[in-house]
Length: 83
Image (cartoon, rainbow, N blue to C red; front, side, top):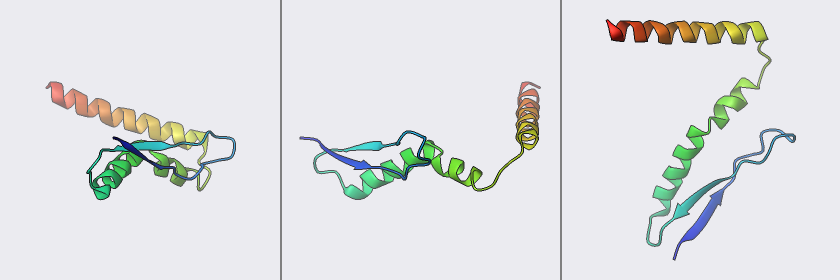
């Protein structure tokens, strides 16, 4: 028999949908292990990164510049890998 433990992070904004992560806990499995799986799943959703980014306004030009710099860096790594 499987039990379902649900952990719901806070609602990011009222206009956004609620996000719910479901972690399936098998019979006899340690709750600490299930909590660790939940934390890993939560990190992969990038919720905290989004919340930190919303704490203060970032100009669109700054966002674009950061994206271009990241793309240049990745391209540089790929060029070095192919050499």
